[in-house]
Length: 297
Image 1 (cartoon, rainbow, N blue to C red):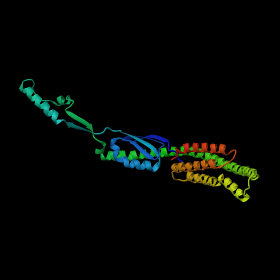
Image 2 (cartoon, rainbow, N blue to C red):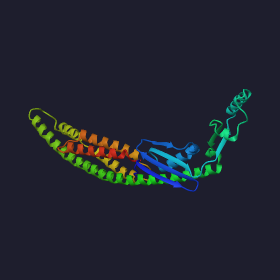
Image 3 (cartoon, helix red, strand yellow):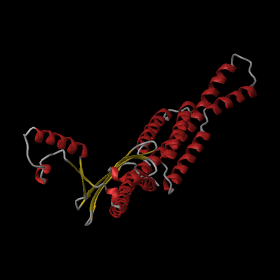
Image 4 (cartoon, helix red, strand yellow):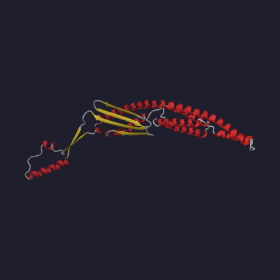
């Protein structure tokens, strides 16, 4: 089916333990290119996140951003800086020996020393239950966002399919017109050649059979029936690909190249008053289709 590579989805999910925000956007790209922005605590989920994206997207640049905020403060770890406290103790002993200081440090004294303690939040990984909960909720939220992204890409693809269907019919009609104009041009060419042969035979001794054979050869060079048949086959194949369940963007792009090649050959071979005008119109329509197909997955 025809699905756009452009889409966007954003959502926030929360429970009593965590709030998770997910933003996912996709744009055109020749292949599937995934870019993730996630907290370090979710680094181990990257393989699962990639598998999720691949389930919903076959082509395009997909940018996934995940924010995690715990609803409850993380446990903290308090550590004494032994080297600093040892240095402070040595300095105080020297001060006492010189009579500059009496007594010992109190807890209050220690708390007023900013470098005496190191206070840090406990990493999420050290709380196995919370880490598993956050990982599970993250995967659920990301998949929900990808479902929304896929729905948007399908809606956009529907508009693309409608436009491409109309243009495909238009270019098919143009090629039918080229075939008719080329047929008329071929008949006119035979008439012109016949008149020219009659003019020449009045002065030259020519074999009528040989002359007739050459006339037929020249007329055959302008025959585009094979190109028209192949083009119609491409048009039929287009319908099959666009209705298939598989991603078809790259195949449609290749098919357009073949259709354009057939039209170019028609233009170089066919003879007729309207052929050139119809060829230009057909190529313009194919170019518009090519621009649209660049956004098809």
